[in-house]
Length: 68
Image 1 (spheres, one colour):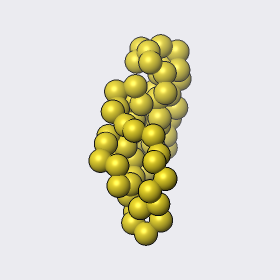
Image 2: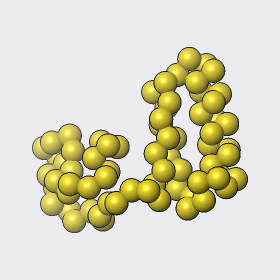
Image 3: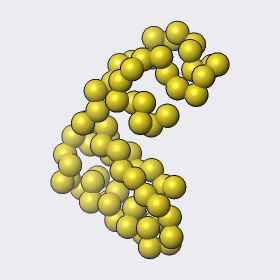
Image 4: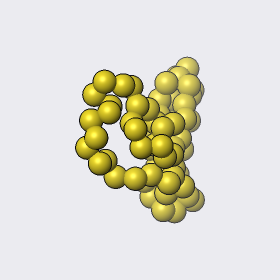
């Protein structure tokens, strides 16, 4: 699995075009791919609750759960 993270606020910008090309190459090589557009996510900063040290996820219930 190849995960591409798009951090640009421009979903049709140059960074997005390059990412899509890279993901197309990964798919052509037989990999499954997924793109996560960060600007569409609603997430909170780390509050250092240390929940993740004993669990495989964060205690903050936000859109970052899909990345864990």
